[in-house]
Image (tube, one colour):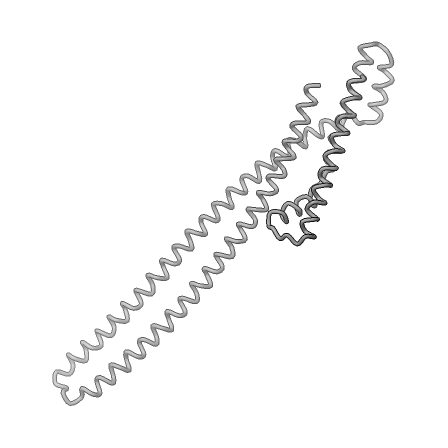
Length: 248
């Protein structure tokens, strides 16, 4: 019994020391902020510390307290004195029913970690797919511009061939034909520039949308990774406490 109470006292001291350490680190991060030291990592650590909840430590201490009461009852029962009264008090308080709930919390945390890992993999596949789609879109835009220029050249050649075949003798109209060809070339060039400009604008807008989606996915991936790390840390702490309980 004295060993159990001493162990409870040590756990309370350890928890108090951890809380004090978190408080000191929080003040240190606030000092960095007041000193106007702009660092992305420090800002992320500060925000994570401010969002962190230490309430599960109290729940674990409650679990330890219940376990100590159960151990004391077992000792009283082994010694044959006052066991019935202690057991009735614990059953009336209903604290012994909280231990299975904590074990269920551990299993739920593991399930959440697995779900987050699967979501991270899905986001990575989506990012890769967006990159491939972006590459295919750029290749398609280049090929369409080349095909447009080739088709316009073929049409111009067909017009010139038709004119040369329909007028075998036109030495007197060379000047008019030259002006006509220049006008046709100018119109074709304007049409090519207009179509190419529209295609470039469409491709640029699509590329920007894809890049924005990639940035959003990367931000979501970073957020999920941070949540995953916090859940893993909480799970490790709970397993450590569970192993300590099993050794008692």
